[in-house]
Image 1 (tube, rainbow, N blue to C red):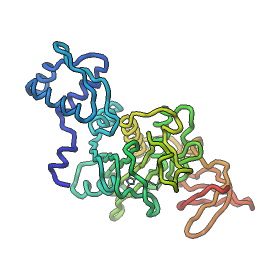
Image 2 (image 1 turned 180 degrees about the vertical axis):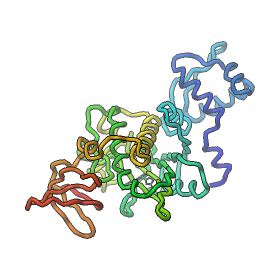
Image 3 (image 1 turned 90 degrees about the vertical axis):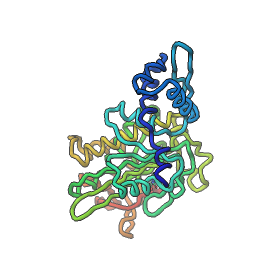
Length: 338
Ligand code: BTN
């Protein structure tokens, strides 16, 4: 992608200021001349920027002698909107939006190699080569869903990475729970988010480690937000769901994206930078979707069957087999037994 294309995708700071003014005053009119004065640009320039915002799906009312009022946000992802909501949460971050991309994790790698300052987030409405864990594909064709990567450069010893995806899952479940209050959101160890026994999100953390230092973390998440599971590929129709399907209401995608980014930053601060005092085992327990279930885990080509109990301090899943022996599963794939 050329630099010119990037510039079109990146939020312009003038547009961001206009948008913030409109969003900060949801029920009132914002004066065009005040905006022009504040930005040091002409009224026609303000008019032009508002016309661009309308083209991007914002409904903006204009009334002579009163100014402009935002009526409706676009339903698709928009970098400025995500940035606005993230900033409101107190942890601003640079957000890049790509309508279509191969993979947000791959774009994050490219941005890192071009030395983009971290942290930053990459959001997309469609991935052509979305990837999941264990070399699987991640179906990424619906603009009603969210494909997102959040990138950090900690430069600390790599041990801290061990729990990062677990903490990200915890904070993301907590952040999204308020949007679907009637349906508990849970985590299927280690990196799937489940509700009503179906997967609504998958997380993929990729990291670069150099000589004892954790150089970069690319945390990717594919989150089914407003999509209809009846339209999913046949092979996942019975096992996948969306927040809309369980909550019954369409959610505002940009606010959802902002919540996920903020929750990921909280996970980073607590787990990687060590700012939290919460215990992982305790935080995980109420969110454990496998608790008390009979499961089979595959670890290093070995199959272990047992009742899932919880995780230990290292983040390993604890399985109690029929003989009363407790097994620690530190990595691998877990399936529920029928
Ligand atoms: C899994 O469940 O296997 C993890 C899926 C992770 C998918 C997300 S979508 C955004 C980011 N970009 C990718 O290519 N993958 C992750």
